[in-house]
Length: 413
Image 1: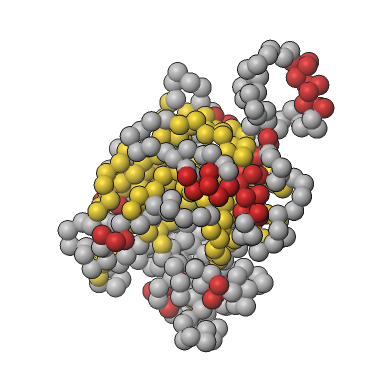
Image 2: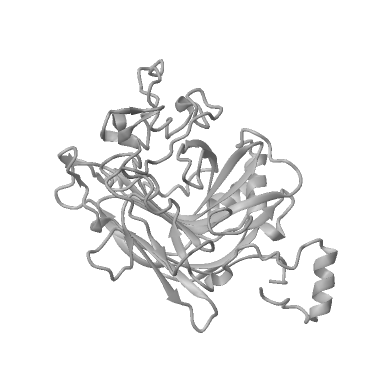
C-alpha cells in the first residue's frame, strides 16, 4: 500500500485514521496485491469434468428450466439441460451461445437433468503455477461454445494454457514476469488464434468458436474474502488500481482454408476487466472494455445489460450472472460521466483507478439491473482481466501489474 503523497503520516497516526474510518488495518483486500507471489491455478479443480469425475451441473435456480434465467431470456440459453420441452418457437432450451448440439456433441446417455456428453470431456487441461495451495490468482480458459465436445476440456478449461515459449504452442498463453525496478510481478497473457486448430475431428469439419482467457482475484477461489466493497456514492474500498498495457498484437484475420467459419464481418478482439458484486441473491457481472477492434469494438454504443447462465457448480461463476457492460473512453464519459482511458494499441502503459461502485451506480441510474442497487456497502467478490477474440488468425497480449484495492483516493494513493 502506497503511503499518502500529500503529507507524511506516522504509523500511529495512520492507525488512528484507519480506526476513524472504520476500515480494518488489513483492508487491502486483494490477497496477492502487486502480484508479489504470482501463484495461479485454473478455476476448475484438477481432474474435474472427465470420465470418473463428471462435471457437476446443477439446476434449481429461479429460471423456468432451472437455470438462473429463463433460457429464452439468456444469450446462453440453459446449457446442458436435458428432458425439457422445446421453447414455443421450436428451439431447444439448451441451444445458445454455449451449446450448439444435443448432448454437447457427445454421448446422449442421460444422467439426471443432463447427458454424459455435457459432463465428461477428453481431459481436464488444468493449469497451476507456483504451488498455488489456497492462495492464488484464478484462471478461466474458455472457448465458446464452451460445452461443446470439440473442446478437449470442460467449460472454463477448454484448452491447454502454457507459457508463450512452450512447445507445442497453444492458443492460451500465460507468464508471470518480473516488474523490476517496480515491486511485484507482471501477468502477461495472450490469446493467439493462429495457434488453434479449428478443425473438429468429432464433426469432421471446421467449427467456429470464440476463445476467452481471464485471470483475476476471486473470493473463494484463491482470495480469502472479497477484494473490496462498493457503494453507489463512491467506493474507496472498491476502487481497483492497476497498470495495463497491450504487450503484443497481430491483426485478426481469417486463416487460409477456414472461410467456412470465418468472414471479415466477424473479426475482432477486445480486452479489459470484469468484476463481481451480488445483491438480491443475483450476481452482477460488470465488464469494462479497455480495448476493442472490429466486430468486438463496442465503443459506439451505450452501456448494456444481458443475462448469462452458467450451471457449472464446480466453478466460481455458478450459476451465472446479470451482465452489465461498459466501454472505456467516450462511451463511459458520455453516459456515466466516468473518465476511464482506452488502452492504446502501441503498448503504452496506462495507470488505472476504477471506482466500481460508481460504475454500478451508473448502471442503476440507467435502469439496467433487474433489481435496483441497494444503499450501503456491497461486497466486491472478484476482479479479473480478460481477452476475447473472434477469427482464425491473429493475436492480442495484455500485461497487467501493480494491482491493488485502494483504501485512500483523491491524492492519497
